[in-house]
Image (cartoon, rainbow, N blue to C red; front, side, top):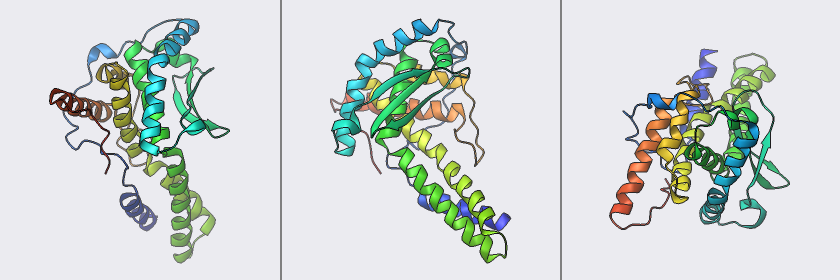
Length: 248
């Protein structure tokens, strides 16, 4: 088992190069304590706030999608929707080739302000722009293949190795993807005229972990990434430079 985990860890390190630059200086920022309390609004109020903010964020996200991917049409035509749910959640998915950004009822009831809505919406759009769902599927497949081959070579059950390797492959990349989407979300929210640092204060309410198999990094790490990215944007604007999203 240790051999399998070690081999898959090497696979994760060597195959998980992000498309966009996550600031290496992203450390030291502390989540503001004032961000912890959540709002207590109705779903109708939260939905109204979401679509109000989306009027500014969606065209910026679609423009960024076109610029970064070189594609247009349905591929960059975001659809925003609301669904039921008792635990706060927002996520990106697809329907008929079109990217879908979903907020659930619990998220809409508890989100603090328009900056949080804008940042979370921009973050989810960032997942699509960076192709994270497709990349996760690819890495899950690579992990499954590696796990099956390694376990079979050790005389074990290839299917068990494939299951473990696939699970590891999918999760091992998730934290990098979240940080990458945080960077993209910072640029999109800032371009739309919102404060991504205040928006990222929502991380004080959402758990993360430094565990290798955790899907989301610790909130402090994510907040620090946003702070560092926002500082880079501000420095470029101060020099009269139009900020561009940095690629590796």
